[in-house]
Length: 321
Ligand code: ASP
Image (cartoon, rainbow, N blue to C red):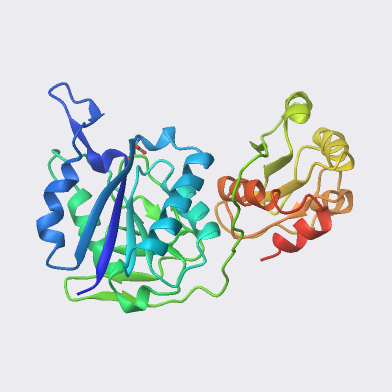
């Protein structure tokens, strides 16, 4: 029987609804009651890492989680890991761990949209399917995975698409890489590329801004003195309001890298348009284009990449994958 480490971090999966319909954290995690059902799938070691709503998650805490997993992997024998997490920021912690853990062992994130005592609570089912996935040989070497609503997604591509529906996690453009049924865990795709940027500290400040029509350059100028890097979610294939160009140029000239992703959920950014604020002008300024990452994930990648280099050419190479 496989040995699976289950680490709880909090979120709705560990919460309950009170008599007034408010969903709140519990002192004792209700997921401990699922240990018996899990033990028919794998030999489970269950621990709480923290018990927080996921909007309280921070990159330093994500780093501590990665470090705890690395330390435990050195001392303890286990075949895979399941992390339970609030769904609001699950994709960020999962991707951060993907950058930190260059493991063959499966690491699977899951959570729930309905708390532990609500009708149709999805937590126990998601936890069981996550443990089944972590115990599957086929899950090895596929990077950090997210299992939710019987689908398997990569941490890199998955995103929360619905505020309350249980079918919230999707991988726009890419789709899930597998499904889980009563009979088994089935993978139908294998990820081709993995980003690995392990760090032992986080000392930089990286901001994320989404552009919008009529956006004022003062927003960029106001944050400029406080940041080491900036991610811009641009329009479409990578265009911005023209008045923002000068403030981005100033940042780049100061050595502050600017990474560009699209605010569209699918497609890629490229230097197609040749007009003020268009992709061609931005590329000429030295803006770094990257694809396959949402703004929030590009921000995490820049946060860790800046611990290794602030050389804009080296960053450009790191962001090509
Ligand atoms: N607000 C909750 C959290 O992220 C939502 C959830 O877990 O589904 O902690």
